[in-house]
Image (tube, rainbow, N blue to C red):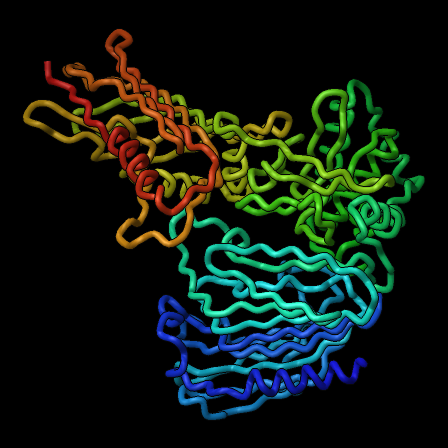
Amino acid sequence: MIKIYQLFFAVLSTWCFAQNYAVNSIPENLLVNANAVIREHSEDYILKSVNEMTIKETHVVTIMSAAGDRHSTVSIPYNPTTKVNNIKVEMFDASGKLDKTFAKKDFADYTNNPSAGLYTDDRILILRTISTKYPFTLKTSYETNTSNTVYLSNFSPINGYNLALEKSNFSIVNNSGISIRIKINDKPIGKVLESKEGNVWKYSYQNITAISPEDLSPSLNYLVPKVEFSPEKFTLEGRQGDLTDWNSFGKWYFNDLISPVSQITPEISAEVAALNLSGSTSEKVKTLYQYMQNKTRYVLIAMGIGGWQPMPASEVAKKGYGDCKALTNYMRTLLTAAGIPSYYSVIYNDDSVISFDKDFPKLSGNHVILMVPTEKNPIWLENTSQRFAFNHLSYSSHNRNVLAVDENGIKIIDTPTYKPEESKELMVAKVQLAEDGSITSNANFQFTGGQYDTNLGLFSLKSDEIKEALKNRHYNLQIDQIAVQNLSNNRDHATISYDLNLKAKGFSKKLGNDLFFPAMPFYPAVTFTTNTERVLPFETSFPFQDDYEIEFSAPFGYQFTDLPETSDFSTEFGSYSLAYKMNGDKLMVRRILTIKKGIYPKEKFKDYVEFRKKTATKDNTKILISKI
């Protein structure tokens, strides 16, 4: 029976790909905004048993210009349990004539460590093709045999911007007797065609036009349709597992992957005992967490059990490094040694929200954190950074769920959700205006929530680099002198603060004997492109609030005269207020901008831009000071 299906796919592939690769045969609508066009893509999976699967793949892409050169590199990953055979690459010119052919011997063989991993047993074959003329077409075909049957691929038409698709086919021949779950995620840009006959399932996409990135576009994961597959029984690196439901999968995950590398050695027990933990659960966890941070550093480890099993906690304790899996499990083991239960939690870390489907168990996720239950709210620990604050998650880990794994299975638990006011930039400044138009300013900045995350990078910079970074941040000012003092990362309360002292010229402008200046010195206007018709929905993935209070002092011999009117307005996207009042001879300006998190239809983009234009106009409100 298997041989019959193999023959079937051989005939099918010959029929599918015996076609004209001339560029002039590409439909005109697929050329719009396309740096490359996928002419044909075929993936044929033959699931033979719980630990044997064959994949035949053919990929034909036309690179239209140098902007599409990333598609001219052929990459074929493999590892000790995945063997690749029958590799063939053909290059065709613009007329569809065969120009060059390549075989496996023409590929370079590298360690596959895209994140600069220190240890990895994954490898990758790379062929960088070169053509002196555009457009040209590459056809790549190869066969993979693997025992890792958990990796039934997602089927999606495109994986990047400015990439169009003529036709893509995906098929499964299930000879294993194993049940396979299927989840179809159609999106406006494309819907899958599906057919089933016995144990042969076929899926296809056709005529997907290229997506160009637009301001505030959601991530491609949100935009692109896909079909997901999940076998109820599987093998991963020689270990058979169960995906019948989340709890069955969680017990396998814990017993086969986590528990064997979580032994509490005498050395780990001694580490915990030496800390003399006391106080509440939260206080004990914080002491252990900051001890772990001070002792370790992040290094990617992609070896063992398909990169899903952490390196042993005892090894992290000795060597002082690990990846997100290893550091999280080490932290979990320290807590266990202290008698504090916690959950090894798998998550999708992404700007756009990606959550696990409670009805679709599957090996997935791209990051690991730790959740510690308490009498009140859970404690969340991000373990990959020495600078991260206790009980703080980045904005790209908020507003979604995690797979919280322990010996009883999996609990699907929601992470916290930032309110804009919890992701705040708070600034209090004193600005002295001078008659020559210059200003001297002393300001204190404090950042919390997601704005804490965006400022953590300052702590990896040298003193001069910090000055330059903040000078660039306030590029709207003509800064002559700048000093940054008291830069602090409060890891107990997730707050970054610093004092910024500067002198800038050309801030005020002459108007006869008077001067006028903008209400907001520190906030350059944000602009968005609306010149073309919007195609994609848009996302404000980063909810925040900027709360500025500025005390202006007039130059000697001048006074503040007519004050502008207060502004206060709200939309579905956020709100804005700008208020003025005199405090003796000082002008107090208070400005609060709030942006909500949300994904909105493309039809509302102009409304959002109008909202941001209005806030920018109000920020640029002119204030007059008159000569006495």
